[in-house]
Length: 265
Image (cartoon, rainbow, N blue to C red):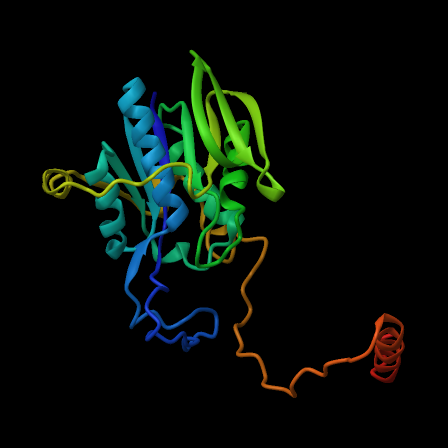
C-alpha cells in the first residue's frame, strides 16, 4: 500500500502574543515573527498514511510546496514513518492559488507509483478546503473528502467513512488509486521518536524547481492562477451594532425601515 501524503507548513496561531500584520506587498502577512508547524489536518493525514503502511506494507512519500524552512515539517513526517520526500521550491511558485497549487502537486505526484494520495481536508491558514479535490481532478482520480475512516477491503478497493453535516458519517466504497482528504480526529497522531528524528535527518529530500516539474511559467504563480490576490486590508472600524428590541412584528418593521433608509431594498 503506497501512499503519497501532502503536507503544508503554516503559521502557529496558538501564540496569543503574535500579532498579524499585512506585509509591504499588500498581498500577504508579515511572517517574520511567526513560528511554523505542520497544518493540523495534514498531521492526521500523515498518521493515517503511516498506519496503512504498517498494516499493509508499502511506502509513504511526503510532498510539500515551500521554502527550505519547510524541511522541518517534512522531516518530522519522515521521522514518524515516512520513507521519502519531495519539496517543490521556486520563487515563481509564489501566489499560486488552489488551481496552480494542485497543478504543482500533480506534477510531482503523477509519475509516482501509489495507491492513495492523502491531503488534509483544510489548511488552517487560508481555510479553502479545495486543494485536495482539485488535485484529484488534475490526476483524473476518484476522491472522497472529509474522510474519518479508511479500511482496505480488497486489492483495489477501500471502504471509507466521510463526515457530513450534523456529525453524520457516510460510508462508501472507492477504488484505488484515489485521493482522500483527511478530517481531523480520524486517529491520534503519534510523536516522533528520537531514533526516527535521527534517521529522518539523514534522508534526502528531493527538491524540484519549475523546470523539474515540466510546467511552464504561465501554469504556476499568479500567471497560472484562476483567482488572484489583489490586496489585503484591515476592516475599517465603524459604529457599534444597533440592537433591535421588541417582538418579531416590531423588529421586522424596524429592520425594513432601516433597509429602506440605507437604500438596500
